[in-house]
Length: 138
Length: 354
Image (cartoon, rainbow over all chains, first blue to last red):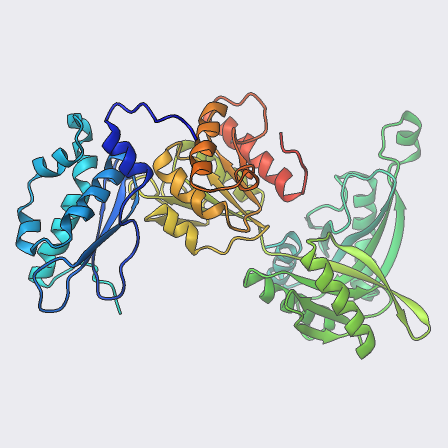
């Protein structure tokens, strides 16, 4: 076993990158949205299980080919989304998502940290409007 | 497309008969291996070479008009080099055995034409086939890797024996060869010609090295699939020579592919965000080659990380990193050349690769 990695961004990011939570796919009927950072290539897909007629996230999962900050952010986000009302997802502040990482994120890397949240918001927002989100086919 | 199928397609496009010379046997040192083919048109046009220039090619060209005129299939044995070259030691010194056949695109109903058409259809579906050509008969049979047959050699027992040998050869990725089969109390000598789909190289990371690599691999007849998560990097403008360009989640694109000994994963992104997820997929696949750009220390660290995730030493040893033959490459095109050369070595079964 190698010694803990010395990481400039802290133990939480390392832990959630090495052992991400909820990195899986949900079943048919999940609300799915994918986000990408077009220059660095981070890609993350957020999946939300929102039962018919409900306005609460029953389950959340993600898939990512992304940097450690982005993967950790997605892992933490999916932990916090479970049980959250949809309007609360839309109301989640960037600062909250950054705080979960428990590390100072340089301005230039905030986009990595916020990509999962932006993707989740997009999934909920377009679900409300009924347009465009890539809801998984049954 | 295989070299032979490409040559036959060209003959068909030209619409005129040609002579097909196939190297079926060698003795001593020769510059090409059995399976090399050369087509010579009635007008003297040359497609491919059985030897690397030299007197044998010249004799094939001289013999072509007679083969085309008579349609007579024949086997000829030729010594490489002339007396002067042999005296000076400037010749390979070996002998070659050539099968000469007429290819006539105007008649698509010959056994030969049907056999190569069947093989072409199989290869187009990314499967391998063998065309069996008796040296003393016009009959042909094509057998694909599933054992499906097209045509017959006129004898069921002979067909069965040839089909069995063909399937073994395909499964073993064996080179083309002459086979000897008992038939009617005698021995029938049959040229077993392997036609396989091109090797496929999945390149992860739409980088400058990848651009050069797709050019080299295109020249080498390999299919390339460029994969990246960034739309503005993985473009047709940047990759005119790539067979396919895929933008999306690299690990998922890689997971969709069928990995065989004829496929390779080349990771050129130099970024763990793609390397780790992609390696998690390909390390447990049947890929014939896995290589990753990066220095020894970085490669070692990556192996350690994956080892902690449960990958075995055997699985991790499949990663060739630093990637490419050690030619002191510094520029993108040089690195690409080193990688292309290592891929050729890998697909030819040359180990170790560095």
